[in-house]
Amino acid sequence: LDLGALPRAAPGVGFALGLTGRRWQAELALRGTLPQEIPGPRQGTFVRAWLLEAELRGCGFLWVGMVSPAICGVVSGGAFGAVSEGVRSPGSGVAPWVAPGAGVRLQARLTHAAGVTLDLEALAPLVRPRLAVEDLGTLHQPSAVVLRGSLGVLWRFP
Image (cartoon, rainbow, N blue to C red):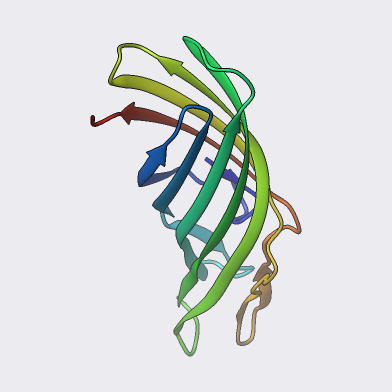
């Protein structure tokens, strides 16, 4: 769930692969938000926006047990896209998305191979594309700080 990239809370879906040591984890993740409609000032005008990202995340565990807390650093890069509809000149565009950040992870082991993770992160977009439409002006610009929460299932391979 992203707060700040789009005007409203944006649910999404993702997938990650990683390496795990005794007290650390490194991951490469692909994630995206579900498209969100941003209404324009006139009836029937809107922009449909989305965010698609690749992330590198590194976490260091404070201690290791059945429940293990970690501090993480993350770098997110990808595409912030939009399509306008209901306007005189409908169009689409894609802008780069680059956002470093930090957060915390709580990881719970269910079995030797399976577990769940809860991540809470804050990211600072280095590029904040404006969603602007001819004759309507700017409809949205991502916040200077994006908050993110995610719940995941973990499966370890020997």
